[in-house]
Image (cartoon, rainbow, N blue to C red):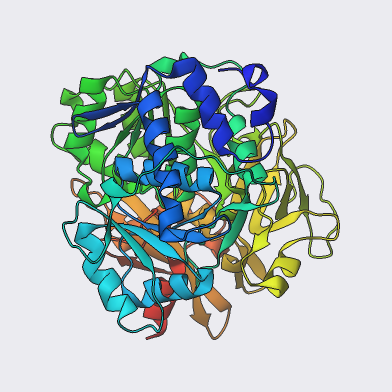
Length: 517
């Protein structure tokens, strides 16, 4: 579906109108597959529109907030699309959250309702028992008579008018550096990101798109890029719960269902390549593979690409930008290893120094971005919102980046992660990139630790591949032979796994706390 074919009334107001256009073009085509159950686009639209109609009886009005506390399942999409249609704000919740985290998000959003699953009701019960408030609780697959049955929350189809500036989505930052913050994404923000993929040459026809979603949909990548964008095009999404991740099952499904699109975190690709039956699967149906969350080992990436016959693409984006601002796919020169590609067609960006002055090609500095997909602000945090934007409307990403002469960008590191060692700026991501090129390293994370003489020194936490042996001295020598001596990790610790958010991002602050203890 080309952008030019989208009706004028879908270009503003309630973002749900975009999906109405999809149904007009692709209504009878498959939209959602979940363990053998399939919904067409028309069926998904009808279910979500009737779910929106059922909100009236629950007292959920336009501007109310609905927490979506679910694993990946069809109800997630029905619920989210239905809430959009009803003008109700969707606030995704990590299904691994328990009382402490749930309390924060319920209180911070001033939520009016929660859509959850029977298996998670005990955590809602435990949380509400500590709070002086009530929520309209809608549960999937529950027989309890003290909650609303998801399958019964239905009425006449409904679509509420909304302004572009009204908040549609209220996700929370992943908490890699501390307390999560609510990110206000308007109907205009969501529409801008969704329509970004409706123009330009596509390698797969719209209805032939089959996107496998094993990433959790509470996260922007899983919800927007893996689910909503393929659906808006008219493609199909295959849903599996992130809690039930299994590398062999994933590869079996890719082969059996001719999956065309897959986005995974680093650990998923490591698990697939190191699986004993990796080479027995035919993965050549993949037209697009992408990864995020951490730098993928060069050896792992090469093995996967050789077997699957598809290059793994990288991109860049944040919760605050509703996903991608940069992408290798769609860039003028295609995939360029080591970079996140060029800015997407709607993104304006620049790299600045500490004084805010724009830097030339090749000079690292903070990446600033501006575009219609960038958030309206942080929820109930006016000071944080003001600090996040420049006077001319650029969002401060907090990431150190540099661009080359062809306008491809490389993310050097998080601004807050830069290690100052004996007066030198050391970027952990550079050390991580070198380490992951070693055949024994599956993944790693580098932090700065205190040092009396140098202020800080780099320390590497390394997860090794089970089939390749290596010592700390061998790794130190490997790095010393590759980059400047002042950058090499003076301490290396082997670990079985790295602390991560559910979306795959390494929580370096936990490594720092562990190191201090």
